[in-house]
Amino acid sequence: MATLTETLSRPEVAEPDAEIDATSREVPLVVKVATALEAAHIRYCQWKGRLKSARWAQGLGDIDLLVDRTSVQAFTAAMASLGFRLAMPRPHLRTPGVLSFIGPDPWLGRLIHVHAHFRLIIGPASGGQFRLPIEEEVLDSAILRRCFRTPSPEFELALFILSSTLRHRVRDWLTRAEPEWLPLAWRQLTLLEEESNLERASAQLARALPQIHAQCFQQCIESLRPGTPRRQRVLARYRLEYRLAAHALRSPPARVFELMRRLALRAWARLGGSTRGKQLASGGIVVALDGADGAGKATCARALATWLSPELDVFTAHLGRPPRSLATIVAGGALKFFEWLDARRRLAEPGRTTAHVQLLRHLATARDRYRLHRRAQRAATAGAISICERYPMPPNKALVGPSAALSLGTSIDSRFAQRLRAMEERYYERITPPDVVLVLRVDAENAVERKTTEPEDYVRARADLMWNADWSGSRAIVVDASPPLTDVLATLRSHVWNAL
Image (cartoon, rainbow, N blue to C red; front, side, top):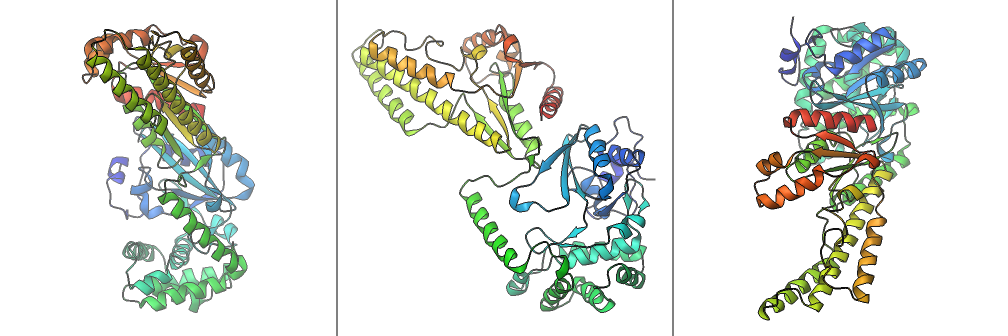
């Protein structure tokens, strides 16, 4: 019998009944899910995707489970006990009767995505979706495979044929392009046919769903075979839609409106708008990642974003180096000009004008940090997970704070300078504390060894400041950053997921 490692190394179309071994020291999350559902006596089945076990077992695809409606609470409790969180797609992508659960798998280092279908919905979200009112028949036929329960071979074959037929598009006919998914679908259909019988599948489907008679079912099968004319494939889709019209999720006018909205959202995404990723039902949060230079903030921030972004909406920001606004660019250019004049005049200290321009530059930077902080907070309010490096807070104000705390621009004490400092302070006071604060703590020696792109004295001084910083009143979670990166990332992932 195949082990889990062998299963994960198989090609996209896995052999039927591929086993996922639960005897390894660390049990994969998908095995825990199947075990928990059996222990809770929940009626369910994996109604599609069984042949892609080599894909979804690695967290690279969704696991689609049909669950009995009467087991909603028990199913939700079982998933919560395994660390899963309820996630919501964007409003225009939501399907009634379908919930998304996302959970971390330490064995894979990925997020596992489970779709719970309390109504049997087929069809692409971008096109027509239809409910098949045969949930009871499919669940009654479920048999236990090596990992999840699946429908009987006949129902599994019928559902695959119907859902694949709805994937045909007019665009493929007009452009005379062979759909990329069709060869794989044909190989899957061949494997499913070896396990069942087409005639029995057609008869069983006709009894459960009289609208789909034998002729319609045969047309759907022909649309998936190689060499079938493109026009015949599209016609098979529309004949099937006509038969299922009473169970359509959207009327034809609503589908046209939905298509127009999707095109508008796609255009918005090209302009830089965020339309990707699901949002947790509990809402978004702001995660601050602070620490000394060389502690690994940038590496950990990228790793956390990479870990979360395949499934969830993620916003990243570096408040220590915010995008420069026009005011900051102008102030910086003026500062360089006046510093050049001071050098020409051979002044030992910055002149009066230069000192005021320095304060203007610090004020502009404070404004940029506040604006980037505002974007991160708004993204979290909209449901995203905002991961922010070098978040300005009282304990680290000596590294990212007002110029007075940094002992910069203090050579001038005019009324105008006092006003500039007061304005700068107000920007930092308006920065809202984050929801989660993770501090990577590393000693000066390790910081100097890791941060080779900066002068040693500079890195050592900043590391000493962060080492002596008092985070006790900020609810910060201090993480030892001296172990290997994999161990540090595992700790950070655990803290972030527990906060969601």
